[in-house]
Length: 379
Image (cartoon, rainbow, N blue to C red; front, side, top):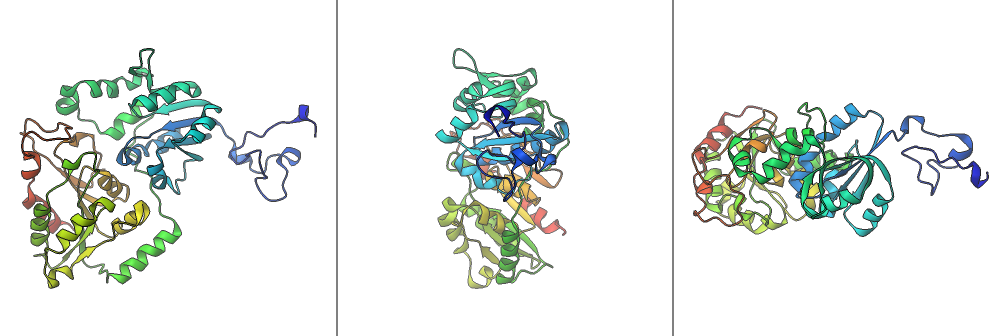
């Protein structure tokens, strides 16, 4: 074959480096996977916050409805990589590093969808070679601006506290669909376990003496260190668990990440030997994927607005979520759970990292409502 005769297949499987399957030459024999046509090439930029990345995955369903024949690339931060494992919609996951950015700059996309209102995400979206851009970009003054008319509502929410904190009634999942000009059908988050992880979950259940007749209430006790006031106090958790354990049909699981290890130990060690038999203190230092395996065990997850809450939503758990500084209207629970917040507290939500009001929004959480909701839950 001569250079002038080279016709590179527009196939998702073809790399130009090695055969798609052993001993098969696509250039001479034709495409080995005609159903893998690239179609519409789409880049999604979703970098900021693990919970936001997971919260954006429902758009994948809508993209495939609108562009059935399409190739989807997703760019995210390295710490979010494992969230996207085994995602059936994503053809290529790019991590936010120099090498990936160099590669992406050299691809011609049909559409780039930038979900993030951050300077670096918008600057990079400016650089991407795409026929159409939706979401957010930078203007000539280095200011974040909407890339399309449909991004205006989301844009205004970011700069108008009255609309964001008091008037908006739409979930973030709904809004991001509008930003990207997609039809919102309340599709679920995309998070899948591998076969090995499914086997691990069953093995772990056996190791803890899992009783399918019981209700298991999981406590996601912590949150990101970026907003430390998104969590209840240790004392509140102890009070909640003490009252929940009064119901002999309910056992408890402590959940969290590496940053919650000491916190969970303090909660666990506040109980006596008999109570500890009904409290599963799950490991917190084994990473996101194993943490998700442990979160798959409980029927209910009690959590503040954190990545753990979004993971519980992805796992389709019944959610008892409570809110202080963050916006409860923006969370989509898919009609499977309750939201607890202070309607008449003037300063909430506020999105402040430091509270000037002695964390009233946390101290006023209705613990009795949480206990009552757990007691009424039926499998």
